[in-house]
Length: 186
Image (cartoon, rainbow, N blue to C red; front, top):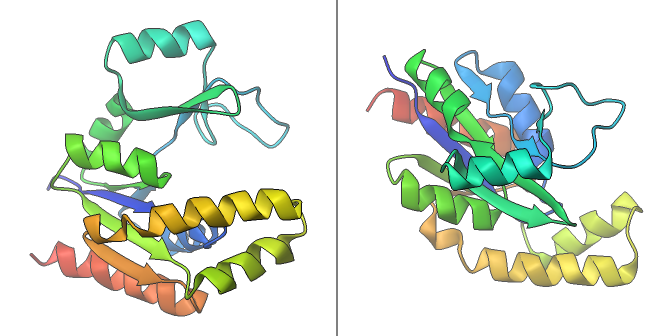
């Protein structure tokens, strides 16, 4: 049985990373897609596990050879989802999960319209601002930028197959698992 492509995205600070970690622990058939990047590896990074690390020339060559489902430049580094590993895992029967930004999800939707697209939304923009502020890792100006970006990303949520509000993490995990399991029986 061929696996399915599942894309999870939403605004920064909505809890996608935490939700995805739980899903990966709780769903045996689910494998996380590993992105490629040109940023330098950090001490906690492992090649092929956290990222595939590429030089800018290697990355540009992959772009020229249409080797990405989507790619973008962020903070002067390239990031993208290589097609080959995703196809391999799908062929092996695994569901492949992409945790990507909204712009990347829009590009993947064009290439793979039959994927399952799940937008993770905050209960409100105010709640999102509180969560971002609570992290204590960004200035008020950076938080304002993230909230403004979130507001424009929220306008695209209707293009997704499903929208899950992450108010209580356990509920959001349950809702996403139900979506994945429901699709198994179709």
